[in-house]
Amino acid sequence: MITTKSFEEKAAGYLERGELQIVQVNMGNLCNQDCLHCHVGGSPRGTRNMDFKTAETIISFLRNNPGLTLDITGGAPELNPNFRHLVMAAMPFAGSIMVRSNLTVMLEPGQEDLPGFLADHRVKIIASLPCYTKVNVDGQRGTGTFEKSIRVLRILNRSGYGRKNGLIIDLVYNPGGGFLPGEQKELEMAYKDKLKSDFGITFNNLLTITNAPIGRFGRQLKEENKLNDYLDLLDENFNRLTLPNIMCRSLISVDYRGVIYDCDFNQVLGLGLKDKEGHPIPISSISAKKLVGQKILTDTHCFSCTAGSGSSCGGALT
Image (cartoon, rainbow, N blue to C red; front, side):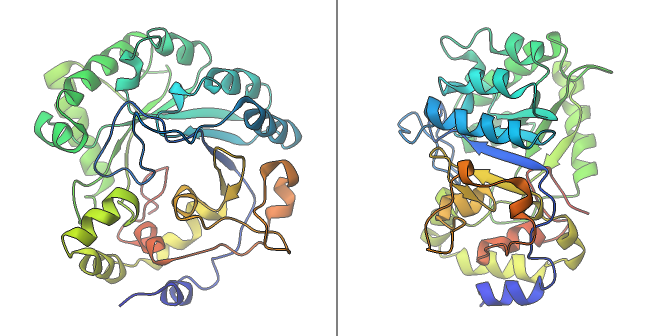
């Protein structure tokens, strides 16, 4: 059975932070969807959401550490009342800004102008679309989700996203069960062919992400008595070539309170960075330089990032 120690042994030499490149901000667990695989437990009932004061501390961090990528996630971060303020205020300091979107949020009341807002501010969109078929998407995300997603993708294409020399929209594929994603480039070709031929939709890149055995997906595996089998699958497919590029070496994850973590998965598990007294570290008390060389906290879920071609918020690693 795999353990935290076994991951640390296999990843030896790569579990210290390098230069910070990405600040990933989780604005909370409020979402208009209630997906089976969601590791943060996002739903319309979500109450853990970032306030204005915390958003201001993130803007201050970006101002003091210019040139970093701001990666905004949730839940559905667009539903947070401070989302647009964060985007606009961060623009002078961030090297680039991206938002992780479930697409259907753009059809919610009051969000009709969201595609135009994102286009006007040249925000890169990382959009979840776990398959190019209605059956699989609706099965994972709820009835009607696929048709809504297609509708929004067409709106985004008309707004300039996914066009040559235009705004960037990448789609995200994650498996619908306890197996590893296929080869990223092959899946991208299949997605592009199917979405173009069936719906006239274009996009830039496809990113494959391996499901981490935590949150709702982890509970599902436990209920089906498949958790150990999935962990063994991740361990058996461990790929040391992924280690130089694992995202925790160059990213920090910030929760809705402003507390920092090595990644979004660690955030869900409460594995936050601590000071010498053992207290959680808020983003307001650190600088990018202070993070270099710090030890990365790990657990068994870390095998999901190093299995096969690897996995990160930016897709495959090899």
